[in-house]
Structures are given as structure tokens and as C-alpha cells.
Length: 392
Image 1 (cartoon, rainbow, N blue to C red):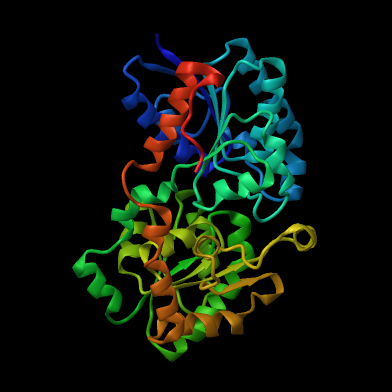
Image 2 (cartoon, helix red, strand yellow):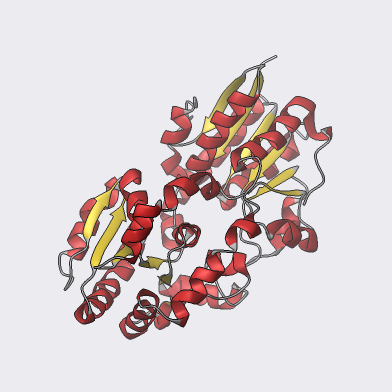
């Protein structure tokens, strides 16, 4: 009998995860799969006819969320109604925790028989740790992408959590250089990646300081600057760099981006998943971030830990320098970037730490999407009583 799976993603990263998972599930399910739900272009290419545009759920920052709140609330009711009208064999919720967790709670209250899988843990290890315990009544399996997350949820009383691996692990061949590309990394002029963010607000808030810092670093040496971006951001990026004292070469598209990663010596990046991409590629880098005043005040009161940079969290040590809010200054960026471009202790410390990531992530055996598919299929075939492997 064909398995019916409802997929729900609320942002670009979730669409990427969802597309890979859908393709893997279809290959692993000889009985066939019928998909319904909400997603973006990648999930559509894998066979999903989205009920409404995924972009209706995408909002970053308090002011953006408030502006879109009526739309988000309407989509919440519609999504729950769609799940309940034709109950799937399993409901898979991907990322976007503020929205997907509300869907899960309402679906569980109305129809407790539907198994619910959450793909990607909310950042309970940074803030709002109570979300871990709150998920337990309505999440049957949490698929974690970072190796320390199962232990975090065990300690906090969260749902059964299974480490499946980060999706970037499926792209290591694109991130890591061949011998010729490795030689270019060591060559002159040094190629530096400029990564001011994948959202408009990030580019606006970081652009001027990134440009000024790169101008000063380039004043002491010749640099080959490359700025990968997304097609819908190309105009904003080119407008932003037009006033920089040194102009990076702006490239668009994944193939060009990963080619630049394989030949880059160092990077200046906005905090986010890209820092983990850089670490897995073995590229020493400096991270920075800035949010609005209100978000910053809230963050100071609720954030935990000594770092928000993914490689630092995974490694358990702060090897990537990070400059947040008022600490994100041009002199700070200039000094740190100069240190990772030049041969020396700062650069070697990152290279040695990044070399340990394969062991920490457990890069062997099944791919992350295949591990995730195993859990989803067991629940889809056997319901909430499915015998799942013991959480790691």
C-alpha cells in the first residue's frame, strides 16, 4: 500500500533538507509514496505540490514576524486542517520550530494516532531550553543534525532524539579541494571568501563594516576577493560592494560557490550555517553578526553559552573568532582576518581543529538523508508503536 507522507518546511534550509529526504524516501520505499504538504522549489522538484507558497511562513526578526502574523496564523489553521482532513501515515516537520511545533501540538491533540517526526532540533542548547521538554508530548522522533544534540535532549527531558548527521556531510566532495585546488589555496594572491549573509538584513547590517575591513586588509597585501550570493540578492550585493574600497568578484550559483570554497585560503563570514561549511572545507575564517536593537536586548537576557558559532559548538572550543553586535568593529575584523590569512598560530589552530570534524560527525556509513529516511519509514509503516533504534 502506498505510504502517505505530509511534509512541512517553512524556510529555505528546510526546503533543502526536505528535497533530499523526499528523494531518499522514494528510493527506499518499494510500496511507493504519495507526498502532500508545504515546501519550496527543491521539494516541488522531488514531487510535492505545495498547498501554498512556503515564503508565507518565512519571517526573520520580531518586526518581520509581527508584520506577517495574520498570514502566518491563517496558514497555521489551514495546515492543521489539511493534515486532519486526510490523515497521513506520518507527519514530517522540518526546521521552522515556531510554526511547525504549533502544527504538531494541534495535530496531536486532534488526532493522536498520527506519528510526528521533527527534522532539526530547535537551538535549545543556546536559548529557551524549555522547548525540549515541551516537544515530548507531540514529537515521536526528533532527527538531530549535530552530534551533541541527543545528549542535550536526554538531559533536558526532550523527545527521543536520533543523530542522523548534518546535510552538509553529503556535500563534502564539493567543499574539499583536489590537489590542484589545494595548491591554489596556498598560492598568491590569497583567495578570500566574503560572506555577508543570505538575508537582506544581514547584508545591510554587515556590508559597510565588511567592506571597510577588507579595504584595510587589502592595503597591506593583494587579495583575490570572491563573494558568492544567491540570485535574488545579487542586485543588493552589487549595490552594497559598489562603495567598498576593494571590489570582490560577485558570483551566483552553487557550482561557482563551491568551486570558490575549494580554492579559498580564508573567509570573512556572517554567523550561520556557512561557518560550518567553511569548517568542513578546512577554511580558517572570522565570523561576525549584528541584529536589531530589540533582538539584541532580548538575546542578552536569554542566550546561553560562550559562542553561537556552529564549528565552535561542535568542536567544544572557541577556535573561530566571533564578533557580535558592538564587538563587530572594523579594527577587530581587520586584526582577526589578517591573523587567519597569514601563517601563524591562529590559522594553525583552526586548521588542526577542523581536521577533527570528520571523527566528531561520524562521517561513515549511511548518508544523513538515508538515516533520516530509516526513522521516517519505520513510523510510517508501523505507526507510533514502531520499534525505533535506541536514541544515541
